[in-house]
Length: 65
Image 1 (tube, rainbow, N blue to C red):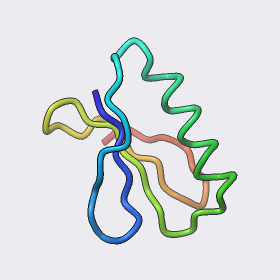
Image 2: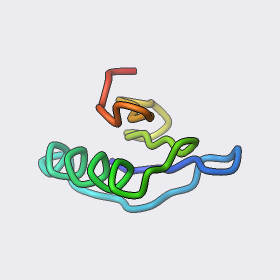
Image 3: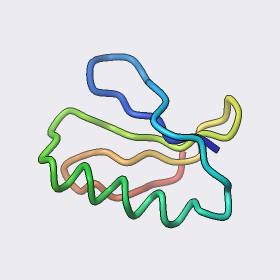
């Protein structure tokens, strides 16, 4: 799986991780977005070319794709 970020119109890879760590990656990345006060930055988790989940402000909580 991979965590991606979009902050200026394009999705970019942040990290590739084992699916068993998905919950940890979701928690850490949501906390990072919230701590940074990122108003226009989004993250998503993909497996291959399939988007699994999104995390967007203002709530910075994950939702299924």
